Amino acid sequence: MRLAICDDNELERNFLQSLLKKYFSGTSISCEFTLYDRGISLYYDVMEEIEYDIIFLDLFMRDSFGLSIAQKLRGIQYKGKIIFCTVSADYALESYDVYASGYILKPYSLKDIRRTLDRYLPEYQCNSYKINQKAQYVYIPYNDIMYVESSNNKCTIHRSDGREYNIYKKLTEVEEELKDPRFLRCHQSYLVNMNYISEANNSFLLQNGEEILIRAKSKKEIQQKFMDYKAQSACPSN
Image (cartoon, rainbow, N blue to C red; front, side, top):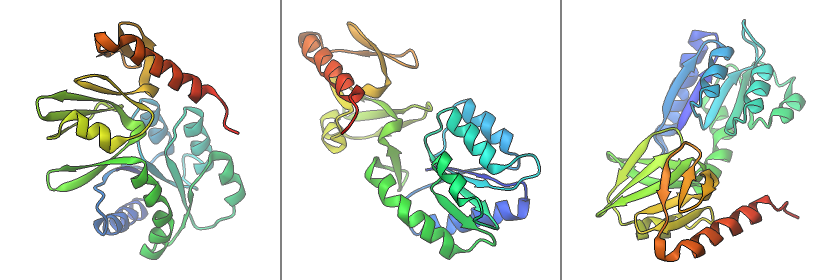
């Protein structure tokens, strides 16, 4: 899980990181932290497609108002969680406009962090693929998996941010474990997330310019599955 902490107070920034490390040490989730002292720096990084699962955002900073930064982040389609850090919950109503996931009040306590994150983690784990990497578990959100590529008994999971993970499983096994309608087995060596497909011809063209092979013998059937999925995704739910 990738976490960002944005607070212009170095002591509070580091203290929050230490509490979050303590919290996650009691889970099976590994974390990477990036610390920011300016809201605009965070905004520019996200605009450059650096992805975070959760952003902890101080509401009152010298260079910016946290709520304004959150609005900018949503404006560039940041879909992760935003949790405000503040001395007061006065702006609770306004936080709904940016789909904030809650507040952590200062001074920070492990109890408050646990209360906030315990609500979120089951959802995160449910919508993620759990793999073992270097004796620790990594959860990859389904939304972040562009495609899975197979070679012999090894599969490579390609994430939307460019990161790759190797696991020693057959692609059929990965396909069974994912079991989500967005993933399409289009070739003996490829399982693709249809949300990342921009064009479908003799192969699938992904949004990042990569091409994914389509099994020639089943081309029409595979293309139809993709078209059906896109049509269903475009229909508003009742």
